[in-house]
Amino acid sequence: MKKILFIVMLFPSLPLFSQRKIADLKKEDFISDFDLSVNIIRKQHPNPFKFIKEEAFNHKVDSLRKSLVSNPDIYNFISSSPLRLIKDVHTSGTVAEDLSIELYKSVSYFPYPVIVEKGRVFVNIMNKEIPFGSEITTINKVPVKKILTEIASNVDGNIQTGTDRNGNDFARYYSFRYRNHENYTIAFVKPGKTETASITVSPISASDYSYRSAKCVLPFNLLQQSYSIYSDLNDQKQTGILTVGTFNLSEDYAYKEFSNFFKEVNQKKYTNVIIDIRRNSGGNPAIAALLYSFITKNSFANTYTYKTKNITLAYPQYVVDGNMRTYSDEDIRSQNNYLYQRFDKNDTTGWYTGNTRLMEGLLTNFPKDKDAFSGNVKVLVGAETISAATYFASLVKVNNRGLIIGKETASGVDATTAAWFASYQLPATKSVLTIPLTEIYFFNATKDKGRGLMPDKELPIELFIKYALENKDPEMTYAMGEG
Image (cartoon, rainbow, N blue to C red):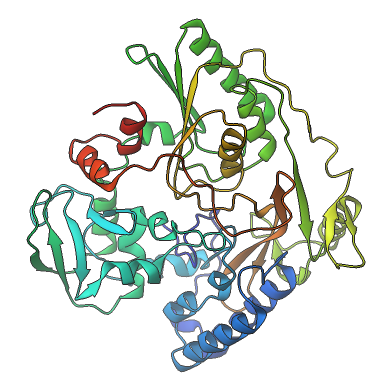
């Protein structure tokens, strides 16, 4: 079931509450939950003003609140969420499940799934009206660049790939923002042409939108994406392909899968390995380091530190677990004690930093695995490469161990938020905000420049279009060296 998100990040399913209607929510509900959201960000986020000055934050919050006061409905409540202001890829919010279905059905949808590449929008479905691969330039006379900016997903700091992150869900997020359109006049350019054509089409229902979304042409590696770890072997190209969809894995499972893959690659005497983490949303950085130990040529430094402004829950009465159970007093004491024992406060700066007890399992001299691969390595990254996945790609780049192909990752190369999170259920709307509790700094970095990992090679847009029209996975085809 689709969920209605404040920010483009998937969220655990929520149990049903008593069946309310959207009409049951009043102006006071939206305003009170908005104000609480702002206070939670201020008091709970580990570094809310890293990428926005507090004065600018206050000014924008005031503007959002005024908009909500003048138009207090569920749609404006979602679009007025203050989460986006702090530029943190790990903050997220979702509407309560009992309202989500009604909300999802209430919107008429833009009728074409698209793929977004480098801020350009291409039709991503075979249909009679607009050929697959056509580039959409305007919708109802609004340039797509402006639309993409308005609906861009959260990224860390000043990362440039936020517009590309929501390509698969462009129709949904666009339709919520421009939900009152009675039709869409679309200007587009057909593949291989230069002249602009135009067509006016009607919106479609939620059911039709869901059906069409399932018929997207790209991406191609749907099978690989359905597993946490998936391997392919190409004898002709002497290449092993390892798709890793998450680093949120147990060490036993991850080691078994990584070891089996690299043992087989070495037995076959392959010369190349491609590691695909384009849609890896992160997890445990220790598992990222474990994967790197299978391609490193030497032992390596696996170093990172945690820091935060606050090690206690700011509003414990609203904190819930994954099953929407409110934290008990014992839950709160346990979490606060855990962090208290593992973070030390610097009285001069006011910051808490992870101590030796927190870092006791960290190997600063991580050994090369006995089944390590010594051949050529390519790593595919993209706008959905986040957190520990960015860290893995950074290990490859810092140690000059392979070629990074793709585009800037969505989380920071110096630092990001990570590790511990608090989920707050807002009392009036029952919406849930998830806020990270700590930051993680990689490779002894002391400053976050607010940019992701930059690739060594970026697929030219002309090749992207060419491969897509040939029904080939563009980045994978490029990495395999096919013309």
